[in-house]
Image (tube, rainbow, N blue to C red; front, side, top):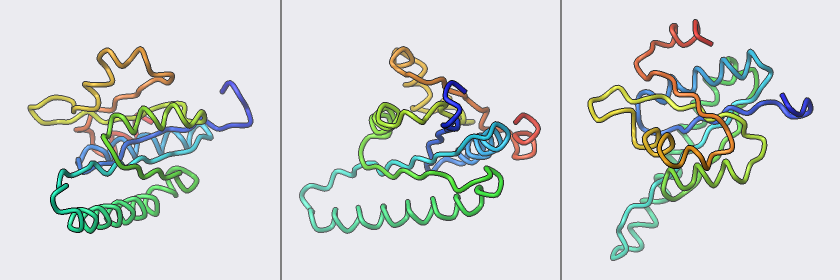
Amino acid sequence: MSDSTQPRVFLVVVDETEEHRVAVQYAARRAAHTGGRLALLHVIEPVDMQQWLAVEELARAERREAAEELLQRLCEEIAPIAGSMPMVYIREGRRRDELLELINEEPTISILVLAAGTGPEGPGPLISYLTGKQAARLRIPITIVPGGLSLDEVDALS
């Protein structure tokens, strides 16, 4: 660590995919083994319903509540593995934009951990985006964990 007063922070994007659990498990284990911290980001993507503003506001509140519940359950489950309660970020907007913004705003974030998708469509839009031209703009390394690993396999790696 470059600064002994700040622990290494492993950031994971939590979404609706099954493979995000693999990334969370890996990052939690790495944080515990290195004296670091785990941070979780969930981005609520906008839904285009401008003609129904009241309905859109209700749907937005429901998505926020669902995000909070998801992250609460995940924190309770993963905190014993990570060694501390994860930092939680909930943002609204485009996932990749909010992720890059958070990384730029939070100097303590030192590693981004993502799990690759296992479907035929490829590793996932976020990995494809970040490993393309955007890779040069990042100030931190990215760890990509194979999304098809079991939690036992993740534990053996980390």
